[in-house]
Length: 334
Image (cartoon, rainbow, N blue to C red; front, side):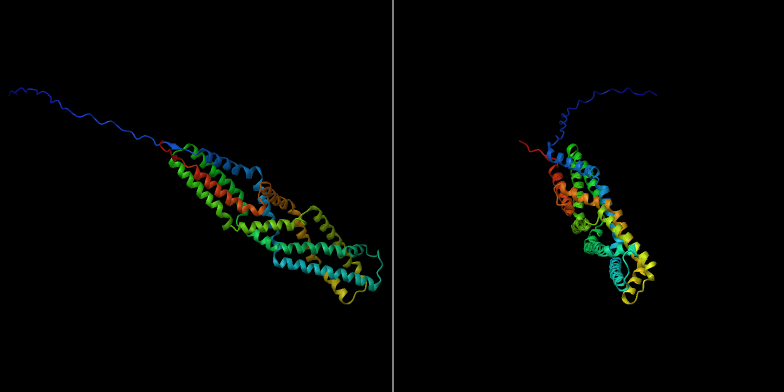
């Protein structure tokens, strides 16, 4: 079977219109305010490094340790017990003098009691002054002890500094979208730092802490501890003689009862005195560390420990303000 040959037809030439030119969106010129971003970076570096270089972590931790170790001595029952101890010591001192006079006890017969009689008034004055100071300071002690996370303040400052460094770097180098996100992060961190003093009772606590430092200062010294320890040695020697050789001296009535109250109550009295003096001695370094924080704030131009809340609030405001000022903006067309 034969297939008929096909004839090829010429292709029709189409006249198509030219394609439109591709129009690319031109980048909107941006203006990056460098001054606030650089200031934000400098502030962040200072806050991230300053607490470490200045030893703020260890100083605040030492202060917190002192507050914790004084807690048992600030309890109502402990302070009432100290007051009862002093009354027992006063009554016994007067009773010994009375018995000496009534029985004509010769000076030198009981050397330890002779020293006790000469120093009883001064010992009572030292102990009374110490107890009065503890009682007066107790309300302020409670306020600073109630601060939530007092020892976390350096961590907050350092973390805030790191957030500022990150945000400043983004504002200086990244796109406008990322810059806005970084500013949002800084604003949130600034708000958290600024409200921390209010949610942690830091405002009232640091004022009380500064008063506590001033009140405790006279007793938190090596000289004071040595004096209290010397008084304790005199009392130990006197009690030993009252409980041994002095029993041979006739004693009746109220003087005898007062001496017996001291002898029988001495284990508890000596435990109270040793515990309180030991706590003072063990925390002199911690007290000085907390006092250094107060001094550090003053050297920075603030008004001491009580200015901590204002400093945190101020840092939060400054950080947020600098970040908002550093947001990249569209450059105005001439």
